[in-house]
Image 1 (cartoon, helix red, strand yellow):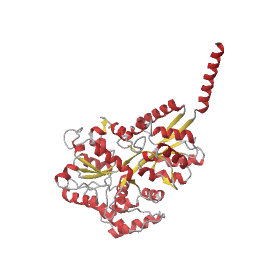
Image 2 (tube, helix red, strand yellow):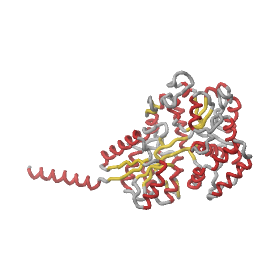
Image 3 (cartoon, one colour):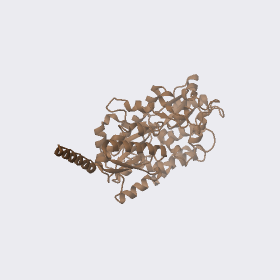
Image 4 (cartoon, one colour):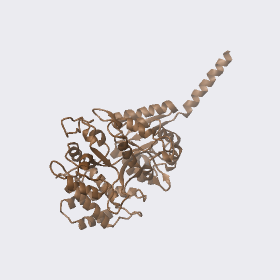
Length: 446
């Protein structure tokens, strides 16, 4: 009997030693640095350790510093195992050799490619491989007063012509502006609107071979339309703040905004109250609001959606197996906690556990949103509205993605040439032809 106890103790000790040997420690750099989001990510790491024995050190890195720090760490051979990054970093990081595309592709294939939205995967494609694993994203929305459109017999704003017709019918300042467009050139928000409108018109500033697009005819369509919506806006340097305030106050027929507006429309945030009546918690505006994710310009009937996606990359310096295992955990067992960091701005890019399954989408709709008051989006918006917003990610696009020129296009976005020139055109300082020519010339000079 004593020998059997010793044998049992020996087996137990061996199991403990094996567990210790195979329990690794990895590091993830995350841009989700707010305290409540860090707590959720730590919970995911704790749950992962409980399930696998592996430890994940979660390190916050400010989004604006992620590229600089990652480049320096790569040069020193000290990249983290897992790197949280934006769509703008996809190809630059991959082309620099920072990301293990083969490992990311294996993760996607193991989980099931058909469980992910195609748009985020297409954005991450390079040389036949998926360079990083998408975790969440959002699709920019044309937000409009559905009640006013219906009352005036207007079509939903799915085309440039629809929007122009709605402006003609509803623009009555200062009580109602037909649109509130961005005009502040040093705000990222203005470039987001410009890129969205350009995609809708079928225009990209970069060609498939990486050269500057000199098609000024399509570019002039973009510029003319932007002037139309700017002319229907209040005066001044406008950015996201004014567009949100005017819409929440009932003084705007249309805006283009990210889905982070969804909880605010439901009266859940005191810092951005709904002021259409005396009840800042009212859901009336949410009920009267419609959303369009894909809209089209002349000559581009298919239209386009603008999407922003976040990724988890397995780096060149990673403990590849454990990093891959952790990412799989994040977008499966840990997915509710990940999306729950900010459900209104973190749409699921993975729909469910197998093709056609919608478990993760349904989970997302049940997550609480809001700041000062919280409740699920499913309590505020009908299911068909939620479904249509999520589906926008499947066709979400960005300049240069289809042709593998995202890195070049990102330089053009960051330079804000179009913001600067469009503002001069809006203000009447230059003609339409001169504005188009200046944009092409300045893009060539980058």
